[in-house]
Image (tube, rainbow, N blue to C red; front, side):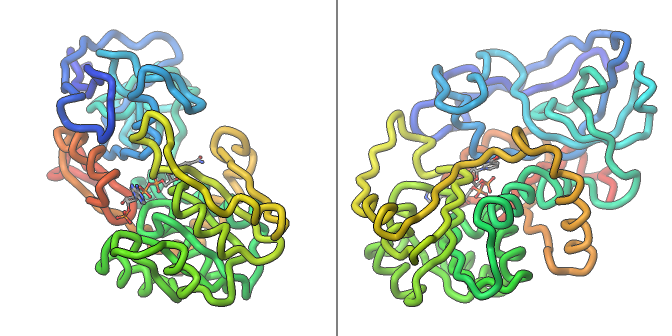
Length: 341
Ligand SMILES: NC(=O)c1ccc[n+]([C@@H]2O[C@H](COP(=O)([O-])OP(=O)(O)OC[C@H]3O[C@@H](n4cnc5c(N)ncnc54)[C@H](OP(=O)(O)O)[C@@H]3O)[C@@H](O)[C@H]2O)c1
């Protein structure tokens, strides 16, 4: 057993963009495993926008704020190195939420066993909650049908880039929004028919109307605010809006967006639904994973990811989520020399 483990802690509450001085990497004493527990050496971590919500003193999310000075939780995959559970043995691979640290320990029920071979980091991306959000939003919320037009915001992000590739596979016409021409070019390569650069001057509403003159039938919202308002303005009758999140407002104490087109919800008979599929519909995970692993195997979905190395890179990775510093899913490889394929 290692005598200590290193974990990122939150030492100050966030206001605005989460900067590196909010975090400290601290040593914690490892305690012996209790009956039924396992210990994992983490190999891959990830960061996501919802972490910002939990850095506030009062959360507006569905999970509580992080405790100051406590190890920050987060998704991770790694190798079981010790087990006092019949469900795991050393050498098994597992996914869990004892991330943002080099070793994770907890009850076996909090760990999911992963296949022994293959790219386990995909479980932090297309095979995990990221992919599930894209899949569930398109199929269960929006009931997407071939030939319809899908608008995706933060389309070059983790959820967005997966949704674009699934959408292309099922015959949707896709308009994606992203910041910068490089991301736009790559979005076209993976299936977007038109791309909006929301960071260039001009009205988003006009940019979307020009990119989708036929209107939109489905909006997968990762951003909220002006993107949501533009989507309302372009919505066709009976459009479905799957609201996965609203990263555009996570750094604001109170969202200050002015919405001009809310009345379109009525006139266009728009259905708008927020959703948390990992929390609410875990019963669909197996079916989702079967489909996603087939898509990955046949090249329909190529998990879009950007890798940074070592535990030390966590704070910058969190900040970069909100400044467009990543393309696709941020992955942090803890042990680049010894990483498994
Ligand atoms: N419902 C659920 O269960 C669930 C699960 C996971 C994630 N989510 C939500 O899904 C959304 C996407 O999550 P993700 O993990 O895939 O993250 P992500 O899209 O990879 O997030 C980072 C990207 O968001 C874009 N962005 C950041 N701030 C923005 C702003 N103010 N306006 C427009 N775009 C902005 C940036 O792309 P650009 O370079 O293009 O600006 C950035 O690269 C988030 O809202 C998240 O909270 C929901």
